[in-house]
Length: 197
Ligand SMILES: O=P(O)(O)OP(=O)(O)OP(=O)(O)OC[C@H]1O[C@@H](n2cnc3c(O)ncnc32)[C@H](O)[C@@H]1O
Ligand SMILES: [Mg+2]
Image (cartoon, rainbow, N blue to C red; front, side, top):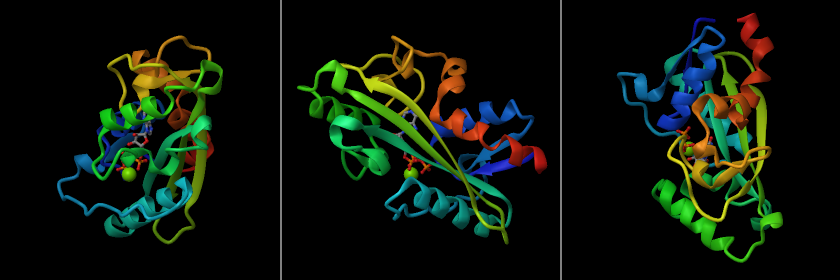
């Protein structure tokens, strides 16, 4: 396989996938790179797996080529796993990273350091027209900081400190994030499949 389409309109994710796939010699293109504007897939599932399948399968059938999708999010133990599948729109109808971050920080304001554990989750779905969809998943453990810091990455990166680090994900270089992220871990599980294509 020399090229793959990633069914995402999230620029942060798209950039990370381009870097991650280039290590395998594969050129990744996202929906933001296509000339035609595809309709948004409605993420009506209640699990990462269901939403990843919806995005990959609907896009693969529209384009008639193999498509990978990522459904991901942040699970916070003190919030019983929220925002979880609803991470992108946690603070309301618009996707607003700053509002989402502020909502999480407010909800955790009385939660002490040792109870602020959390993990990023990524479920990848690969849909090949006429074949059964395959799934891989990856996790990145850490905790929620007391405030935001850092400019790199996207989404909740400014408040997530990965295990083994004393900086937020947004303070890591992209190379550092791409070594440990939930997305990188999930993609590593695909190595065999990629080699067969
Ligand atoms: O569905 P697509 O088009 O891929 O884009 P999206 O932003 O809606 O993506 P999701 O439905 O998978 O929602 C995931 C949300 O979880 C958060 N998230 C996922 N991965 C992240 C990461 O690596 N760093 C920070 N936040 C992340 C971020 O807020 C995302 O918007
Ligand atoms: Mg989405």
